[in-house]
Length: 161
Image 1 (cartoon, helix red, strand yellow):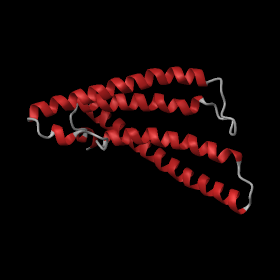
Image 2 (cartoon, rainbow, N blue to C red):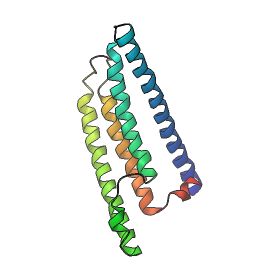
Image 3 (cartoon, one colour):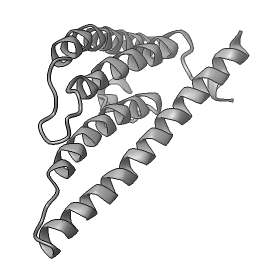
Image 4 (cartoon, one colour):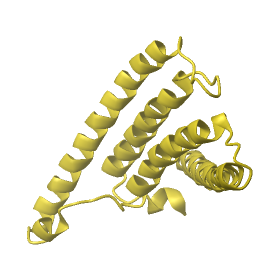
């Protein structure tokens, strides 16, 4: 069971990292194309800025998952480090429960926003607006899973081996 969980965990994390790399690559290409078209040819593409915004939103949300996984998020460690070990563990669990609760809210409200955005399209690209708001749903779900894993398996190194 733990072997299958480890495999899924690694696969999902590699997929998130790959998607972030591809998004960053597309952002560089699209932004370069926009600059070239605007300042050299004086004919900016209408879709470039909108697509860059969509990609940046997804990049930011997926980056949150990576930051949480690697414990790179902001924390009040200078205060917590003064506590005894048992209190540190309790504060860590409470923090992760709070993150899990918030991610559950992100997931639930993200679903509602996706439903509302299903009828709208982005003006320049025609991309459904729900594709943008779906980032909330995916991020909320993956943060919830990551938080629960970190509560029950304090170090995810067990899954990363």
